[in-house]
Amino acid sequence: MLPARTQVAIVGAGPSGLLLGALLHKAGIDHVLIERQSPGYVLGRIRAGILEQGTVNLLREAGVGHGVDNAGIVHHSIELVFKNTRHAIDVTGLTQGKVVTAYGQTELTRDLMEHRQSLGLPTVYEATDVQLQGFEGNSPSVTFHKDGVAHTLACDFIAGCDGYHGVARASVPKNAITEYEKVYPFAWLGVLADVPPVSSHAIVYANSDRGFALCSMRSMTRSRYYVQCPSTDSVNQWSDQRFWDEIRLRLDPELSQRMQTGPSIEKSMAPLRSFVAEPMRFGRLFLAGDAAHIVPPTGAKGLNLAASDVKYLSSAFIEHYVDRSTAGIDHYSQRALARIWRAERFSWWLTSLMHQFPETGAFGQKMQEAELEYLVNSPALSTSLSENYVGLPLDFAT
Ligand code: FAS
Ligand code: PHB
Image 1 (cartoon, rainbow, N blue to C red):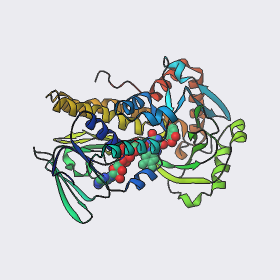
Image 2: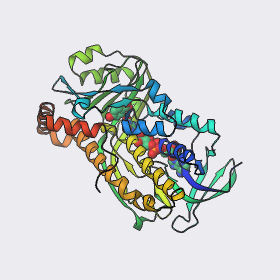
Image 3: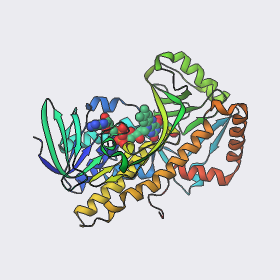
Image 4: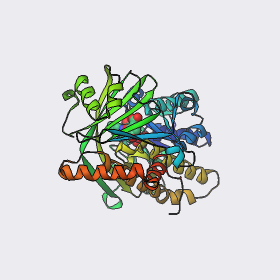
């Protein structure tokens, strides 16, 4: 039986909404999670694969760290391929011991869902016609239909965790929000295959004059690979054979020769954009995760930014309800945006460095190769790459 009222209404049961729900429950704050898709649909979306340590710590804090602790693959380096040569960047050595962990968003989302189900927390899947009301005043509510029945959920606050195409940001009056966007002239074609990853100890990023490629993993027996392709391409233009042939042409000879291929178990196209909406608070509505920002996945920041938003927002709600302080709520947007813009810059920079841009031609390729040559030989630039890759601190002077 759904309550008619709660303290926090969370719209969206992706990683942001689920993680926020777990942290609010742990703090004894009532909330209801409203999701428009089915659990299977949410789990079927294959997305991120690299977690910053801050994200792993937050999962542990939420009581959901068992999956990543048992199956996560810790990485101490990344590898850059350009001019047919591969270079290792000692990320851990350059960041005084910091690491990243390879653990799929699908597995993380499943861990969060199972945790939520074990607690019997109020969750509405397949909600339709979700609408946000009254968040500019003191009596916000979320209305929706479930199995043909209309519901109104009164609440103190609404957390818009419903992604780039969600209803939360779309509910904000146009004159109250500023959107910054850059759409890249290409997409990523991603393939999941049950073959051992070509490099199990490091993510491989390849710049070639045929386009970008990325070699990642989900386990020691399941690989996740991407190639840059025209944004006008569709998945059915890419047979498995065409994909395997193309990615091997973009890697160095040793990796290309070592790559094990097999039938794809998932194949999808992801458009690339940089996007930020400012501010992230509108009265009693707060945006978190992809609802407020998008990064090109090159820097593996999307899911990790969602996690830092949730860290800030859950702390703000806890301060409000437990400490009776509005400081966290009042500072949330400024605090989150400070970290978001630094990750936006890093993701844009790495995307610009690694991808083929038709309009810059052969000179552009030479500039990228010169910068990569400089990067792999410069402790300063390699350190800059590494400190961004492992994740910037949660707080710095804003
Ligand atoms: P999500 O979009 O994951 O979740 C939002 C949820 O809200 C969804 O379940 C949606 O169904 C629901 N929703 C939407 N509208 C609603 C409504 N009106 N009412 C109720 N619910 C509603 N990041 C990386 O780091 N690496 C990657 O390789 C990578 N690849 C990606 C590929 C794609 C195609 C996309 C779209 C994103 C990718 N990302 C990647 C970024 C991704 O991991 C996001 O950062 C992450 O999913 C953010 O989580 P949420 O903020 O929860 O948003
Ligand atoms: C992934 O494993 O899906 C992945 C890894 C690193 C990235 C992007 C995606 O930069």
